[in-house]
Image (cartoon, rainbow, N blue to C red; front, side):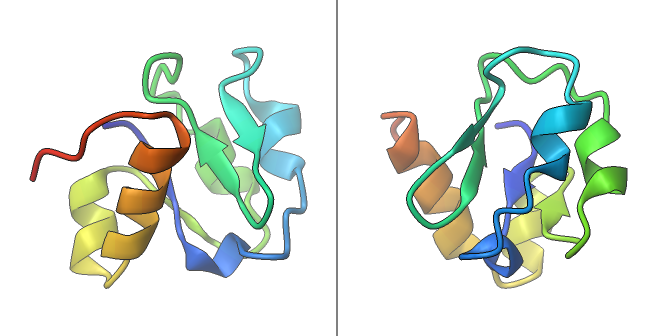
Length: 85
């Protein structure tokens, strides 16, 4: 999976990541958080540097290492993908 937006984004949803993303509809606003579509993400990193709450991880492995397994699961669920650890 591509980048993962972690729990620091919950209920913040600043939207700066959407504005800098060069791919339309790659970052989607959910009810509580933003989500990055792994099928559309080109791993450019623009969103990472723009996030005001440093909530974006550059891989699901990094997210998991930082205790964000729930965010990984939520991203999979949001886009109806099966999680394969």
